[in-house]
Amino acid sequence: MDNDQAVTTDTVSNGAVNVDSHNVAENEQSMDKETKKEEHPIFKLIEEGNIDAVQKQIDVEGVSIETEDSHGMTPLMHASWKGRTDIVEFLLKQGASPNGGNHEHDYTCLHFAGLAGSTEICRMLLEAGAKAYHTNSVNRTAAAMAAFVGNHSCVAVINNFVSKEEVWCYTRKQPLESEPKLPQELAKSVYKIVMSMNTNPVRIGLILREEPKLVENIKKVANVLELMSDKQFKNRQDVNEILSLKFHILHYILKGIMKEKEIDEKRTEEKKTPFIDRWIKGMLLGRDTDGFAAYQENFLRQGVKEFPFPESQLFKMLVTNFSHCKNYGEGQTAAEYINAAFNGQKGFKDFENCASCGEEKAEKKCSSCKAVFYCDQVCQKLHWFMHKKFCAAMKIQQEKMDALKEQNEKNDKESAKSQAA
Ligand SMILES: [Zn+2]
Ligand SMILES: [Zn+2]
Image (tube, rainbow, N blue to C red):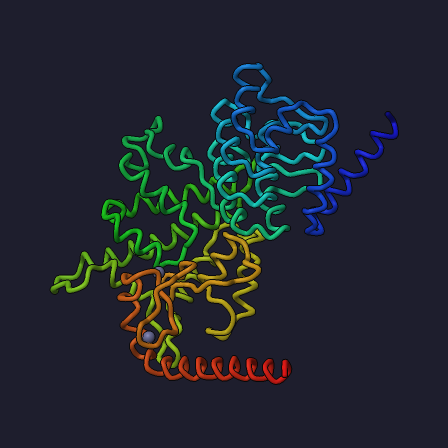
């Protein structure tokens, strides 16, 4: 018995180290070995993905939903670890606690979902109230563990998650207020902004363009975002500097749009373009030499500098990045640095970003030069006033590159042929 226990502790502590060194496969193996000891049958059924049998265990056999195995893992933890989305959904509906269990190394369901790489399960657990700030015995949050093993989309989901209550609480009137800070009918649209994984000012401008109610009440919305930023940083239980900085940047962008709106309201001459379009175009306006959006760069850098909590590590990291990148156009843009700070750095990028709003996985190419990508026609149309100055030159460059690529492929084929002969 003593011996048995010694082995178990050994494998598990090895497992914890393995996760840190990216070796999840071994960790999984050691966990699999352990679960094969005499555990409650429900854990095996979860592993097999047998939802009907799991349901029967809970509904008919009366097995407690918070049953723990010998490592303190609950059924929900097992289902999260095995990526069993349907079982996770069922267990949550039955009232399983997303923060439950007593894992011997303090892993939570969210840690397991992040390690397993399931964005869907991460989202479900967060919506059910999983606390992203819980740390395991090596002091790492679920997002940190997911980042370790390269599950960047889980990191992004965890870091950007905002509970609905965090927005809806401003729609209720406080004791000394004559009206709530946020009109009820705006809550949904504000939630859309704060949940956007892309804080590029052009993308935010486009969201606002589609939501005229937000523009009408832009001052209120900007104020609420500022309050939300403050609350995240001052939360004693869970300082979330990512969300604090994100809400601050959103507030700063809205403030910028608000200024444009005020100028527009004072103008008496005929208004050919709506002010929001004018503001977005300002964000895309590039310098003559290469079209680099210098105004946007300065605007965003200034926005970060105005973050009221300079002690934040994330703030310091961004400011350092900016100071290393003095020559505009070298390295990443401020919008890219900011998005990376919120969503995590991507290890390997196998997609194109929209030349207009920075959205990932842009698939529409400029039909002439085939060198720049856009989300859709809306983004392309907005960018054309800039791109038209460079399209022809980019086309020549792109054709040269394509010809070179073709020649290389031909050479490779020929050398392979001669080798075979
Ligand atoms: Zn776009
Ligand atoms: Zn083009």
